[in-house]
Length: 446
Image 1 (cartoon, rainbow, N blue to C red):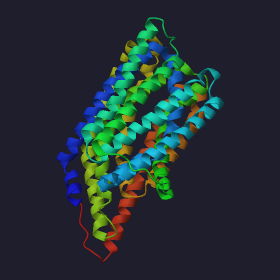
Image 2: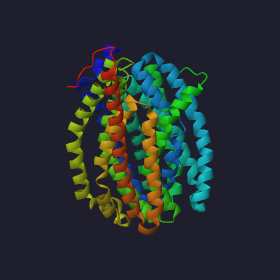
Image 3: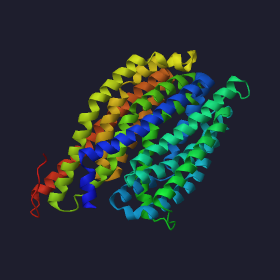
Image 4: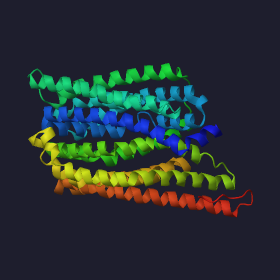
């Protein structure tokens, strides 16, 4: 295992894995772009806004359907591959049970905050994202943990391909008048694409790595996984709930143009996410090297800092360029999506700084996850979600989507600052303990 950890920290190994993930995410991005354009043109800004508002609500809850088991699987199998069957079985059991609870909660909450016309969308989206989407993510994490990055990258692209294919069929049916151009008509087809992609992912995982081992899920696993679930839900809350609030306020066209601009930002951020997806197992291995010895603690800090320097040094200049390009290409949106999305030009220009802010909090937040308690990162993300919700509740009634944009920028900046502060505190504490301990010599970071 030590040899595998040392090999995985080499620059060429990280580069190889990152290239696979970026290639897969790049293919997924192209397919998502096609899907996005087809659905935008078929639905128009108001119906598209209704769809993204419902998806945003379900997205926050869907993070709890797996209770973070996919991240426990990634961490445990990255460190000890023989844990795969048990970790996969646990993830499957929890995800299926959690999806049933999510379906009930999503329908209940949706009836409270959405207009009656949107209620039929809720069960379809809950199944698509809360069950099938989470199962595909479990499969991808398992392949990632065993360093089969080629297949880990293929699975998300497969989901995007399935949705793009169904979107093309829907667009054609709308054009020929066979299906109404409504969000309800779209979600009735949307969930089938997710189901097909998830089924193929589970078959592939079984073929590559073997069958799961089902058994009793321990309370300790649920408690630890909950920290990852709260973290993911907080991320979804500060990224998505602004669309839900816009829709619940009856501002569906505003939700549509803001959601379209946000989708472009998400696509532009995908290479950053791919880089950190590839690097996360290395962060976990580096964070697990310290043990309780003084020298080991300092060595873990040094290895994590080396990874962060490498990632930021390569990604920051490119991310700044991406933000500039987003500002410049914004006028293309109404050309691609239709005249009802004209307001998305201004929205994208407001949001173009988000990739840089995300790079910063991804870097420091991943270091925190790998080195100290996940609950510390979760606390920062929950605080960011609370800040975003408060700002949106204050700003959206007055400024509509512009208020949501201000809230998003402030939230990501605050999260970056909190993540950096947590990391510096932990690293400083580890070094201090290493210096005062007489147990071993303390290496210096190069």
